[in-house]
Length: 333
Image (cartoon, rainbow, N blue to C red):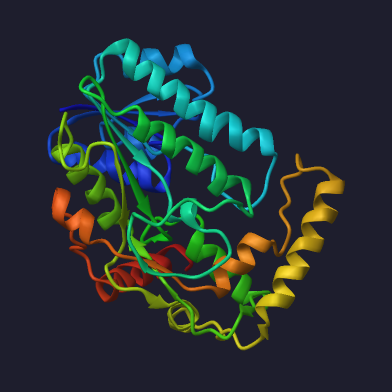
């Protein structure tokens, strides 16, 4: 199979590319920068921006399947950037697939596309998109997801996967950031600490993408559908984070803040940081979206992914944590 991975220099995109390469597929990554760690594996790399439609068309030429993992994540940033890359970039990928005859498109979405403010406990893919979003990231990912799924037809088969809180060795964001804040005494538990949250180990997330691509085709059960993917069992978020924090010889999080207080502070910070200009790289210490994500339960039923393309988390959470800790101890020496 000849494949292209957008965002292939990132955490998930890189894992998808590596897994494709290891099983013998011909894979190329598309990204805005050079990625020596990807090129050293013998994987082809193309420099290009998702906002450049011509560059995207050149990248997908002759490709059978596109894994569209490229996006701007985060809780803060210029609104136009989220829309131009997450929505505009996805439209460019769809157009390029049409123009060059790509048969399959696997889109990386997020469970946050269905997250408003309330809790989501064991819901499946029938849960609707909310009427209002608390951040540009989930809103733009939802717009892009809907367009990807609407594009499914007999010439281009599409599917959307929704992994949540991807972690593991090589994680450049989630766990290292948590550890840094905990070490500096700047991490505070939001809410009562009882909220259950879905997570997914990096290799499980990448494998799900390959499984979906292999099953995808005109009329396939997964064609034109979105799927939650996770470890299959949620964790008590703050207990899980504290276990990792303590394993790294850092004092566990003891300070707490009520959800409503954090939410109100987030609203104030959003106003202040907006007045200062969204183009700044600094992000507020709290936002309404972050407060809700840290305090509310949100976990999902993955039975559809199991049924339609055979997904099952091969690496358990306990096994994944051991791999993560081994890696962290190596890079933080």
